[in-house]
Image (cartoon, rainbow, N blue to C red; front, side):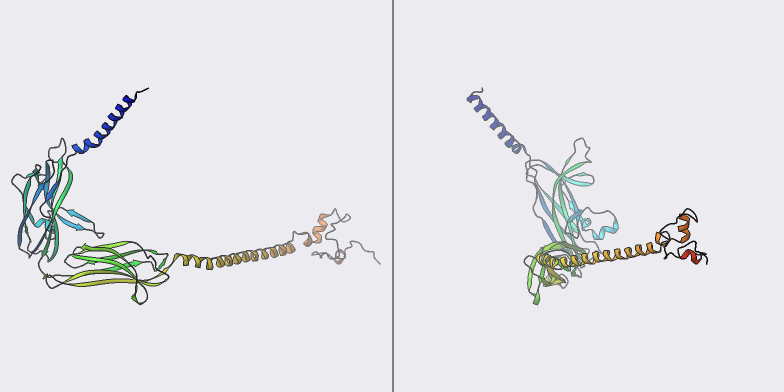
Length: 396
């Protein structure tokens, strides 16, 4: 048996081991942090004009870092998901790629990997990165979006500098307005929902199309209107959502009309936004766009009650009709079977005397009692003597 002192010592050592396991990784965990002095730039330039600006990038962690520096165009899908695309070298994409219009100015200590500059920064370092943006002649008026990225990475062991492992990135966004004619054209379309809503839930879909050349911020909500345009239900889909120029935004899902009773309603999608007037002079007016459709809401309890009241008699009536049809189908069959027996030449009641005679033992022998009665029919070629039931009669 272990002594109490040994048990206490083992418990103390176990507790110390657990504590060391919990504390040691935190103390040894390296932290890599990169920060920027600013996150956005708003520029307005006419075709042919240029602008120079810059920012500072800092290593706020306790480990050395390496960071790629590059530009990318902002792409957004109809669900609002953003992706970033490096500039394409093909000339046909140049006028639509603001990332191609930027020339980065990095420190002299910057190195290159895979045709991309990268910074080497010790903890506490802060380096300037400037850029020049030149809008090309022929660029269409409107809004453009690009990002200057700083992407931390590490070289893989054993590589010769051509392979890297990404560990995080941060970017400064550049929102550019190319001065010219402003086209503010955003619409709300394609509202879909069920015509009859049984219960309180229906799927829906609605589309926002920005066919203008400027970016828009919108608020979108759904409302259910009763008699007299009274609002019975509402739900906000999104507030201050960005819809970029020549892009679409698509909303879909399911909504539940909580607390709404039976009746006919107007289901409406509402979009609020500020409409720009003039040629980019900053004058805006509030606008609202709507799209709607009519629908009926049938509470689930009412649908079940109607099903019970109408369904059970209907099922019973269907059953009665089906059983009557089956019975009527059997009666003609019975009558046909009886008629067949009456006319079947093979039945006993319709046998001819020839048949009866053939069934006997000869002219002097007994014949079948079935066909020897006075009601027996006269066979073809037979005389009345046979028909009278006597084969031999006395001659006078």
